[in-house]
Image (cartoon, rainbow, N blue to C red; front, side, top):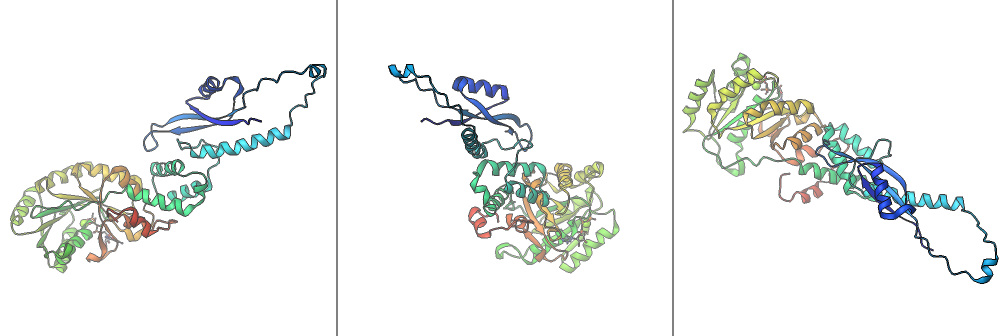
Length: 398
Ligand SMILES: Nc1nc2c(ncn2[C@@H]2O[C@H](COP(=O)(O)OP(=O)(O)OP(=O)(O)O)[C@@H](O)[C@H]2O)c(=O)[nH]1
Ligand SMILES: [Mg+2]
């Protein structure tokens, strides 16, 4: 006895699905179930609604067998449909359809549809770690697309994949070398994020712990933070501890002069700047003008705190964009485990991460060259399989 079978059709509207079904199967097929989903778009925007309909196609009617003479004498007995059997069949078909829908792109299930437990848990883990709504949407969408229904039951496996996808979205700054001598390194960013502290950590690394056993570097510090007397003296005190020369530049001409004085003799000049609110556009413009004398080869880094809100990080990135910063330094990693805000902002802006800092003292121990693991290791609720991630990122970057 031939069986019914199922198919799915997809169209922008339910009426269009009905038309497609009629076109393909004639009147015998009927839509058993349908869902409205969103598909395509970018970071949750510009996606389109689509209807996915599950269609039951009963077998084609077989031609009646030729009647034998005695049959025509008998009155045919129609036993009528067995309702129990039909309900059972519908249930089986329904289960099959649910499984199929789980494989289907696009991924956003319409409101009212029950999500798989893993997706619900993952969604709340991502939210708990402060990932942006669009990043959460992107990850959940990808899980729905790439995991078949049974595979979703393995939460750890889903987590490892998700961590690897996050890692793929973080760009690591490779240092940008070889550098012209002297390197001019400038730290910009909002107030109180740790620019001065970080600059001293960098100075200490370059002077006392240069890369790959290379020679100790001759360096000098300049501060253009002249609006608060305390700020210049803070840097001077720290510089004295490091036995590094430190000068204050009061305006653009002085900065130009101080840079020229150091152009032949030093390996690197590190410049500390005035902490500015990203909303203070006028002061930001003045500072940008002053820093123009650093030249196009200056390595400008945007510094912000790991605990800043996602929206504040995005605003900071936007307002400091005119400084042409090459990469980002994330400070105070020791103060939070919720780094979804940072990961989302880096992923969505495509800005590379250069360094992270993780402690108050100005010793080099508390600054690290950026790696993917810096951000992925301690996310709340995620258990990272380090070996597996290392294997995934064989090109480095960890
Ligand atoms: N926990 C922690 N504290 C840090 C870190 N880096 C800096 N700090 C602290 O953050 C505070 C502000 O640091 P500063 O270096 O003065 O910050 P700034 O960006 O130069 O501040 P302004 O010059 O006022 O804009 C200080 O108390 C530092 O000790 C870090 O990695 N971890
Ligand atoms: Mg400062």
